[in-house]
Image 1: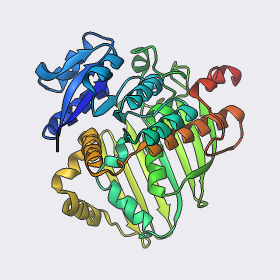
Image 2: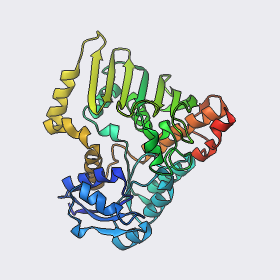
Image 3: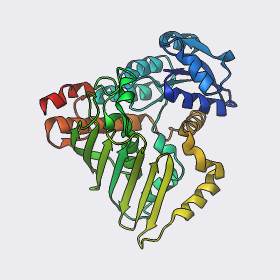
Image 4: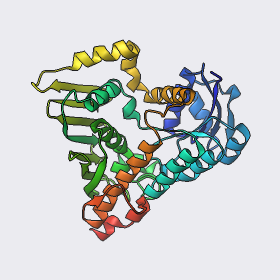
Length: 370
């Protein structure tokens, strides 16, 4: 396979994970350029990733980088509010995309990006990292195939605390226009995973938002309930108002003949898989993971971006869709915007949204509801 040319647009903290993944897959891809408006940021990313900078060009204009290099993959790691314009330009110029979440800050814009990728015959891999964690794919197939019986309900709880120093580190953090709040930024991964594991589509959202602790424009606490097209229900809690020393995320799918619970707490995985009689099945699934993907796959959560790139490169080679594809990007944003709209209007909202709704439409929400 000819090496795929990759450029990364945006040199913040997550870009280091991208560069490390590319370095590990250097036999099949190569980093050709970094793009950032800051002169110092690209060098810091390369240094942090221990990547040889000799063959990497640096640009401050993403259009120039795309035009001159004609990359196979454009990885977009800029603030969320800039995703739409960059993704559109890259697709129009024949580039496949690796997009960090969320796809865009608007349901209409996300649908446009999805439809443009289909029209151009190009692929999008979304940075929905939880889909690439160990056991997740295996469990999803078993849930889909009825091993645990019918899905009854699911829930997620994301407690990803951030102090005011995190939000003050960049003017765009916590704003409706460029970032959104705890649900849009910190919880969208979990919402995507829960919907994917449950194997059905959201058809209605009901929600409430609050701003309890953090000095930001958007919510630091949100709760929602989704009604799925098969009658199952899913509950969602996401907050950044808890301690930044105790990051945790818990995902559970409850079925008629068993329960699947996965989670992270302070970076350590949690696992509780039980059959209908309450008997644990953790070891069975760990052994299955090792047999299918090797023992090294158990540590893939340390840098799930390696899994994203590996899967994306294979998808491009084989003509299939990535595990987290363009539709997942559009659908997750549409669900989030439905949740936001429900909170703003104080009523259940039908999904998918029939009209465009943007995070900017939430501007002034807490002032109006104080």
